[in-house]
Length: 465
Picture 1: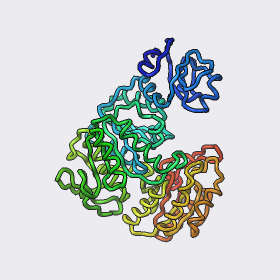
Picture 2: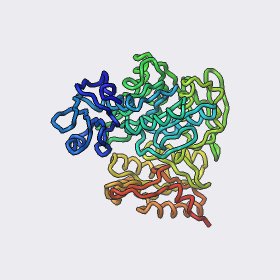
Picture 3: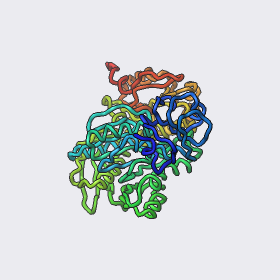
Picture 4: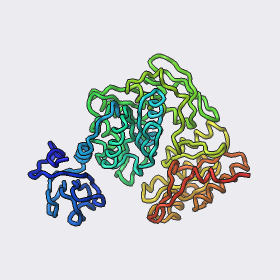
């Protein structure tokens, strides 16, 4: 694509060349590329790369063509979208919130597929086009160049419906601002990512920007009426003339009237548009009913008749309250709120004592460690603290931070050893084992290195007596 065409109405340039690629990562730059410089790291190395053109908020480097913009990050997603000539699917929804995003977008894709539509989801589990999954994402919301390269593949498969996760990082870094959303949904809000955001208020403001900065006016908002943040988001939606679909247990368009636990799922009674439906939802997790309601709101906003939705055909997303063996469940819970909900849900479904294995990630929000330790101490019957993804932190220090608030726990640093020991305990004593924190992940990051590791595979490969 020609540079002037690419930067039309974004940045004025006096020269014109053919652009072969766009990136914000200096390590990906090749001759003929446009580098959009977003960080200090990019600024430090611009003179050592081969980019033919650079957009930056500073001057004084050796690129053939330089274009100045005071906030390159703000226009980056739009530039990448234009380069990949992304053709918008018929319907695109973005889902944000602290917990539940993955389940919502997965349920949306499954429902669309079961209703006969070509559909895709993008998020923590990777990209799933119809029923073909690629584990290609390390970020909940991919960087803009990765995202739009993925969307180009979606274009090639004529996908009509797309649901994607919108993380606070992704929104704050303008990764999805090039999308023309048809709907935006909100799940819930709790403590997370304070290593990135300065405080809880800034964290929520990043989420909120999806509704007033990314979603076009007049489009649809799907809101949880049972969370404190509902009124702030409703005010934004009303001010912008958005259509609103609400869900929850009280006074909502999609109302959960009753939940009855079963060992392999739950019976639900849901009211939609003054009609009452009774159904079996074959997914563990009391909280998953809320994620289902949110997904139904997205589906309705996409024009699908809610009477066509086959709830009994849904399956749990990988690593989300996934029953790997009859007495062992894996869940991605890595916040205090999510861990509490996972523990309460297992007791609700199975009415047995619970052994919990969990840890906390390194180089991330350290304040979560105390909260998760307290939750474990309060709601699990036995606890083993182990390593999650320590990254570049000392694993023993992370475990210590947790154990200060969970003094009755056993400490086993080796995650495989911890899981196998607890499987024996659970099997012999008739308990349920919950392995929390890593869910679907197939790796463990320690001392700057990434190793193959899967909670699910450890459990499957363990031979029981």
